[in-house]
Image 1 (tube, rainbow, N blue to C red):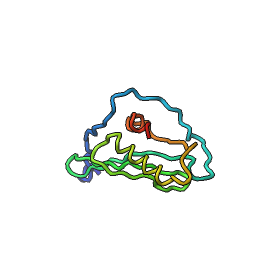
Image 2 (tube, helix red, strand yellow; image 1 turned 135 degrees about the vertical axis):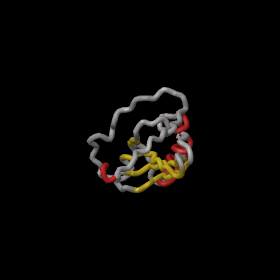
Image 3 (cartoon, one colour; image 1 turned 90 degrees about the horizontal axis):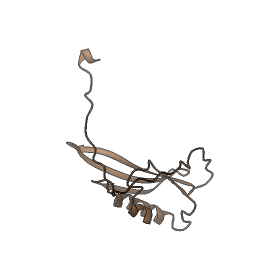
Image 4 (cartoon, rainbow, N blue to C red; image 1 turned 60 degrees about the vertical axis):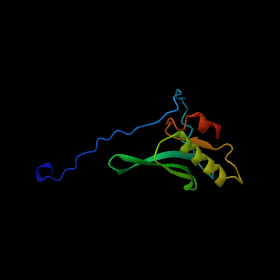
Length: 122
């Protein structure tokens, strides 16, 4: 394909990550091998990056209940500050206020947003 000029040059953008400056905690993967039989057993946090214009990044923070596949929190942002992850978690609590999330496992990539003081306060 390269001889026909049909290759795509990979983007080499640097993604700026934020941190609250604290050391990262290590958490075991409690989701590994877990068999789900109801909602509110496992929620997964994720941050999706979008390059919108000339290396201007946009982010979407999500929290998803894995059993029901329902999005419990969704927060768009122009930065990766932990406060946006916290807002997403607050949305999840509001979605499940009737039954609560007590005993629910929270799984993430252990990014600094999920290890921040603000997130842990939620």
